[in-house]
Image 1: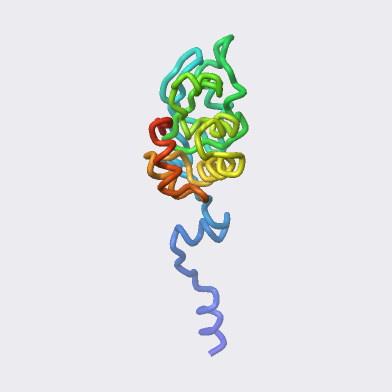
Image 2 (image 1 turned 45 degrees about the horizontal axis):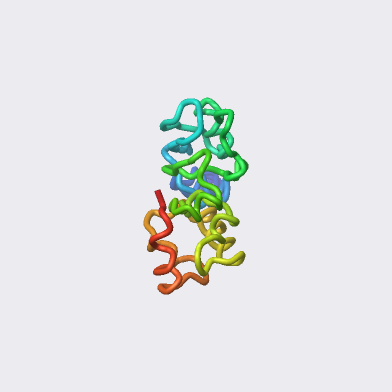
Length: 169
């Protein structure tokens, strides 16, 4: 009986691959990534070589800008959070319109705008602007304008006021 117990104790156990990875690394982060952990991003605007770029796991906005040949001399990098981790499928626009351009009628890209630019929109103050930024950093870029209703303190009335003034693309 002792030999049987030893044989059963030393028998290998079958472990599902996802369980083994989670046990070794902890739960998977809630970020969107291409197979292999890579991210594919579209870098456009004031960069030397705009286009699609595949970057490694943990890449940041600054890595995407560098991959596109770096910013052009007059590029406004203050509109970007260069330290933000990338999400698969997003677009990085270098040199987006600042608050002064918003007043002239250019739509605000809610996936790229900083808090100051978001605050130029009717009904969007400091708290809601920060809620928008926090939401997109946690959940990735907004796919459609209506997704903004998932942000705390944005209801149908606020969305109706800002819809003609914003874009997600």
